Length: 413
Image (cartoon, rainbow, N blue to C red; front, side, top):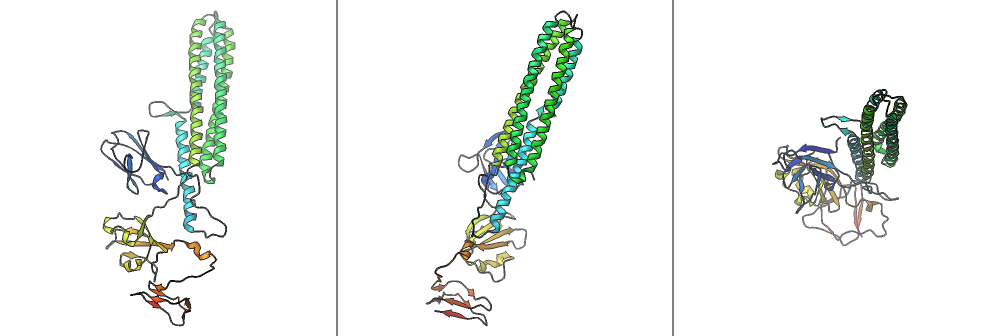
């Protein structure tokens, strides 16, 4: 799954939608024409129109490149577990989702780095360093043929050829630095999350390409040495050979510059991979509301929106708008309920997702004193074949019912 969406502005459109998931809104970034745009309110340059739509305050210019992408931080895990504490499935799911998102982003960043390491020819195509080196070898062979006829000023040609050898050696050293940098990138990738195997494979391919470039450069050195030998026997057209050799020297200098640029690009790619491996987040797709009354009206909600009701007190009184709720469920301030809007149904309803205790670890805590309220302020049914006990006095609240099933006892001490 891609972790970014790219398009071009048309000078009037402000809203752009994307399809990839994310953990929290701050993980979503946007650039226009390569410039990062700030997110938020007030003086910020964009905000969320809805969960999957970015709204720019000013419409991007016609033809301006727009990139909307996810950047999940990984400084810390979403949840940390301690000996003796409860392990919640949501925490486990959040941790694995975090790892998955970071891995996807590292994969996409590695692919982008590989693309950037190639040279654009200006006609919509890219040429690898190996192809450029092969072209340089061909040029050198042509120079060798021309040098075969050189005689009178062979010493000058020899000096120029020596300079070319020196330049080639410099290029070889630079290529060696590129290999060292690539090896460092491999080491960094090995320390990344175990799910970053794809990025490691890409880095290995980069090392192979670099080694090929070294081999080609060595061949260029051998060819240059042969050109020097031929130059010693040159006779008549040395001046032309000198001119050609100077052009070859210029070409070699350009190749050396390109190799240095490749090293810089590899270093930048390594830094990008390291930064990507150091990003984390912890969020959910559920929008949190205090209670059922705080939910928006179904007529104003997009289909498929998720909401988390932190205090589910009396939510059972609204089951006419909710489907899929557990039989006999009774809301409570200590229970959270998760719902999903279904506005395609007739009538529109909230679909029950799950519920859980706000502090489930209380069930595992060793109690020194057990407390109960003086007033039963909700409808309550003692479990079938269970007995119950309270410390009195205890009163049943107005309009509330306490049900004691057959074969069950309730004691007030």
